[in-house]
Length: 85
Image (spheres, one colour):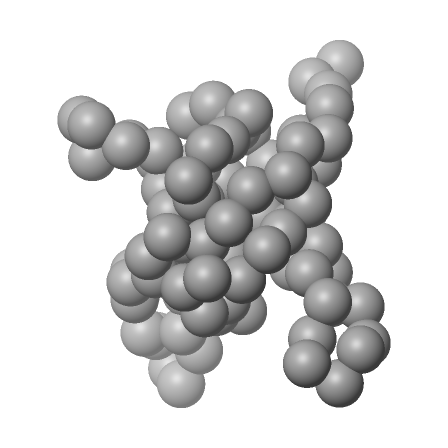
């Protein structure tokens, strides 16, 4: 399932042994809690960036996507949810 969205916010989820993990909030999402997939964006240089979505969590109001590469607020993305088998 593919959809278009814009990054609204980002926050650091954790930092362990020099590795960071982020949570990204989109203006709309088709991801549900526990879903995985990818976010695709185009960098300012024109290169395509694919960011794996490791999972999705909720804070009770919103669904935040867990990623290892940060995306700046305002970035337009195409989300792709992996279909669970």
